[in-house]
Length: 455
Image 1 (cartoon, rainbow, N blue to C red):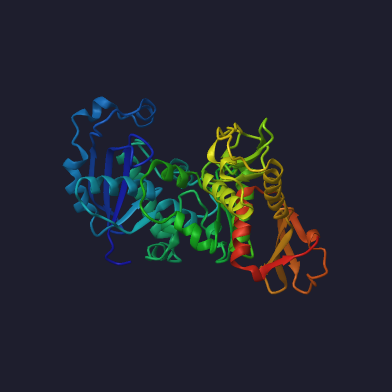
Image 2: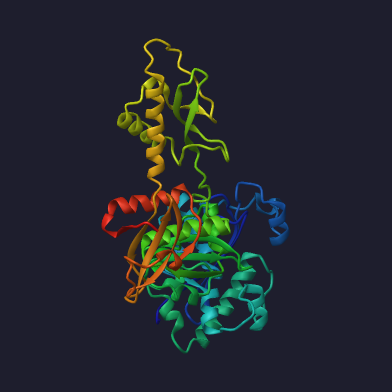
């Protein structure tokens, strides 16, 4: 680590994310591994109002920054100071995201290796109650003045950094600076051991906040690789910044296959309703296939929007799936098109055909409609998907009963599946049309893994 120079940086801002907030103060201390050899500090005009709560915290008011230089006025100085240096900060990703974003806006393309003093302190001085800058300085007897001002916090971070270098007899900081080190990309509040425990196997992972509440559930073919992807890149969007800040822990459950991971993800999102999951929260089918008998005695089939808890012949997640199913029934059973409505029905409201001439025979027509409905009912059979297990000693089983996803589990590899009662090995979860569609699509693609029985 000889000849390395470090830029110890602290900033104050108008808010918590780089895309929607601006820097109001910046301090940069150049450290040669022994001492601070150069210093730059200035207020910055953010060209927008500083919210009152932030002003109260930092002591930086709108009046104080009104005559200060804009960031683009000091961008070249900042860029010159940072180039070729290791970027050091307490909760480094926060400061780095702001500086990188505003340098980019000012026309300077810059990246740097990063070092987080929170993470370094956790490794070099483990077991402390808190690693926030104020609490850490009190625990380590580091003087800190002008708290929540860039210069004061940067001074304290520089002293902390010098102490960490002196205490680092195992070369922790050198390892952290390696290009491939995961620590530099991890959220500041996430214990590294939680990440290191992740296997490179399929499964479901859970992110927790500081109160040990699940805030995100995801599925992965490779758990370690997928979780690491959440922490890569330099997005400065508010939601991502808040998301990373809120991650205080990770747990996981290994699954035998990607399909089982997908299904478990759906189950857990529905059960836990995590804050940062949005795409899979609303599984309820929005469309349905309806059957109606008009006053003239003719039966109609129609696809349309489905009201909550409204009964229908079959539910669909998309209008397209409903229309395609109805088209297939019309062709297969030669149903008169005048008695079929494709996507024109709202909440079960049906419209009787105005064409009264040359109508088909009433009984024959109604029998065709009934046959189509019976055909759909017959498709609601029970089957199992048997696949590899989590080890050589087991196999996995996904169970569909009466056309609905029932659950999944694991069987001993020695079990005779042709005669065994598989259901007792399955954990019931309860499904929805989306989960059933996942299973049906897999069964269609891999028919050799489908076991049809009279269960």
